[in-house]
Amino acid sequence: MIENQDSDWEKIAGKLHNELSVEEEIEFNEMMSGKGHLIKFEKAQKIKEDLSKAGPISENGKIVSWHRVGAGIKTYRLRWIKAAMKYAAIVAVAFIAGNLFRSHSSLDQAPHFSEIFVPYGQMSQLTLSDGTKVWLNSGTTMRYPDRFSEDSRSVSVKGEAYFQVAKMPDKPFTVNSADLKVKVLGTSFNFSAYPEDNYSSVTLVEGKVAVQDCEGKTIVKLHSGQIATKDKNTKTLTIKEEKTAFYSAWIEGKIFFDDERLDQIALKLERWFNVEIYFADQQLKSKRFTGTILKNKPVDQIMQALELLSPIKFQHQINSNGKDKITIYKRS
Amino acid sequence: MEEDLKLWKKIRNGDTQALKVLHDRYYYQMYLFGKKICHNPSILDEVVSDCFIKLWTKRNDLTIDRSVKAYLFQILRNGLIDTLRRKEHNFYLAENTIPDLPDDEPGELDRYALLYKAMEKLPGRRRRILELAVYESYSYAQIAEKLHITVNTVKTQMGRAYRFLKEELDPKSLQLLFMLTSNYQ
Image (tube, rainbow over all chains, first blue to last red; front, side, top):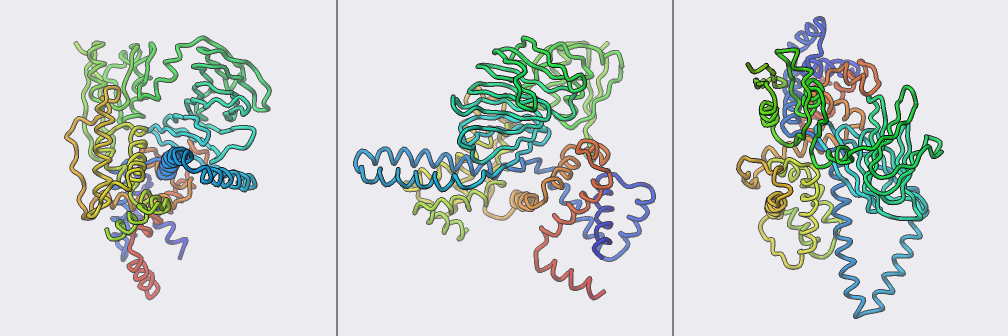
């Protein structure tokens, strides 16, 4: 009975996502003539439609938001208590004693880890319990404790993140990934380690960081403006001087292109705007562009900007059943 | 609405737990409404949270006797417009007209909010698979490759995700009725 239900639902999901083989399509049609299945299918269809209309919301959005509210009302309370202290020392003493007691009892508990995943087409920003600010780029997962331990701060990242680390000289901050570790005391840097990319990199914007291997052995110390890239295949680490604005611009919703080919740019636009881009003229693919794109503008405006810069024109075809299509032509 | 006013009374008495209940009740609706005005998720995130901080800090000076929900949506809309009109965020302001505040009748925002509350209960990986398929229009094969799992797993997980959401959204009494009738077949 349960197995049956499972395979019914697999067919419904498969139908909705165009994943049925010819045989499965026949099975699906047979199933739909049975009692109650049409209602199930229509409900599933409605769910898919509603999800697409509402759009992605970060999995941890609600929890992160409440953390922020909690922190916000706490500082407000502290301010109030400081004011009260002037008038009533006893209140202050009681508060400090209460606070000590609370921090003692919390030492016994193991920290609780949270994981945040940012879907494609989205970015997210959060503040960790030590005040460190983190911006997470599309498709990034970060694992972090709700509370850091007494002597160190450590998080793990899969994807790309920009850190503004709160300064704490006696409590280093470490970012871990499958290939690299970064250890810092207080600084801003960009960290990129997407599993599907063939490299991991660290770009230092200000301050000093130590790049380490997975065992924690320091490979190199970076100065601001330097980028360290580790090739996953050759396992070699290269250090270069970089325009750091290039690596931190994404946190403001901008994408920089530095002499990049049009077909590469098209790939990024396809991912970001969920469209399909075709080239009517293959020669256009190798045209190169340098410039900035704002991720939050409609795709048409971006294409218009590209039109101004080069001898291309585009046609946008709206497709209500799937992805919109954009075709790029050569302008005569 | 009655429920909200009870919570508001508790909040006025300094009950942070009541504030959390109110936050969790309206978070998704406010986020989704805010998306119509603001295209930058990190700005939107902060402004939504700020509404609850404002509600808390002003709790002794505010008189809300009609609808807490209406008040929250109003400070959200104003907060977003104020933030976005500041020069540096100007380009995130949606160009279409500012949306009307939702009325108290249940509407599309409430339906989406229920859906997201059901999504919260999905196991993490199942949710990820569904999100890649729905929001990114990934094929099953692409999802399998990205998450290092088999296409068959994707297939099973997709079926279970839809089944779970459908059952979660169905009114409980109807679900019971359905179970009974299917047993009698």
